Length: 227
Length: 251
Ligand SMILES: Nc1ncnc2c1ncn2[C@@H]1O[C@H](COP(=O)(O)OP(=O)(O)O)[C@@H](O)[C@H]1O
Ligand SMILES: [Mg+2]
Image (cartoon, rainbow over all chains, first blue to last red; front, side, top):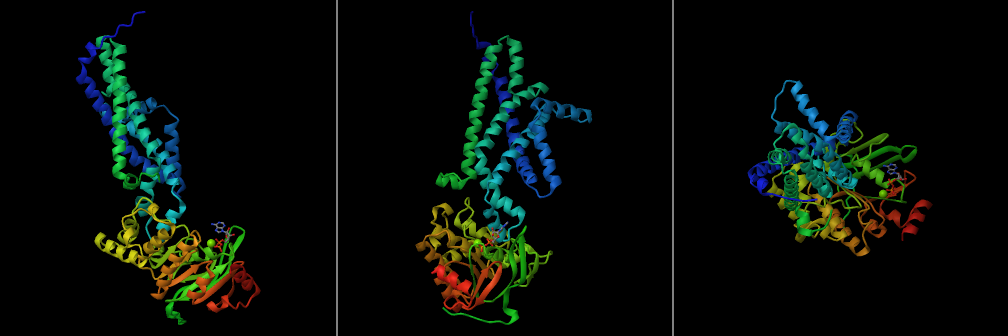
């Protein structure tokens, strides 16, 4: 057996890898922001006293969590196409990833909401705060602080899973790798490099979430204690 | 300490008449009536499970009643069309577990409701936060988080948070039961000062010595009924054997 690695040909293509990495981060960023919004709304919906609302949110979560991401991507891709709507592969990928991660964040944020003691909400009700004000000022931040590690891990997982969108030719990192390896016939080297880039992207995201945590959880920053 | 006792209907702040309330098959309030006039302190006593908390919670519509009538500051609490948030602006309630919001500083805890419910300016709310904190002796804790305070301080901060909404009546449910005697004393002093200022209050407490000093009226609950009621003097000379036994056990 003769392992003969040659990175020269693929390292030459670094601008393409960089473009792919940037696109992957863009996908992850969009899905993180929109997925958080969906997660908060979905969690409120699942806890709604309105049975139809709670049911619809429940069906959404179960449907997503019990189907493969790739199938969801194709459903969005071909679904939009069959409606005669034309979007770029990037838009379709971002939409599918958002829909996917929204279901997971719904469950995570719901667990955070459920962890807020009843007494907190009663105290807020006693102060005449409205339901929306209670969610916004009293429940949201502590709930998210409690589940922040699982929430952020979910977004890192999503960034890694976005490699599947290469299947609909979104020009993200894995798609770039796919065509570079077929150009250079250096498949092993290409995917070694790609794996390293994904690790770097994961570390970048984790560092970003850590910094974000310092900003949005001032109590934790000052006292360092868990909630 | 001065005691004001007026009975004209116009000064009635809280009125319960023939209130019934069950949790499933469990009858908790079985025809409860009492009245609190402006500036009065009514102390609710009774064994654990006799329905004191439930009665108090009905006043602020944390529980809905099965029959009877409750009128609080002109709000008909039993009316299904009640404006709940208007009622709760007039009523302050403090629980045994202080329930300060842990992610907010003491100042933010206090200014939250005045800003978002009454819509007063941030600057005004902060000014008021300083004032109510001074009232409970915590002016130096403005920028601390709840977990940095002792239990007694947290409870005083919770009282200050309620006061910032300028309620017409305050409800206290065993607010010192989670505290050791020393911390209990500092919270009771704050409540005493409120009473001296003329705040109308309904409080559930097991501190009999304190009740004697502060109550204009004592209501002894037993099996979901007002078993005996009268001025603070009934604590020293009870008319019913049940109250005699209760205060005997409590001393
Ligand atoms: N939400 C509830 N559901 C069912 N039972 C309750 C509820 N709240 C109180 N109870 C019951 O009602 C009775 C009276 O409770 P409570 O008003 O808390 O009494 P107290 O404050 O005098 O100790 C108790 O037996 C208690 O277990
Ligand atoms: Mg009780």
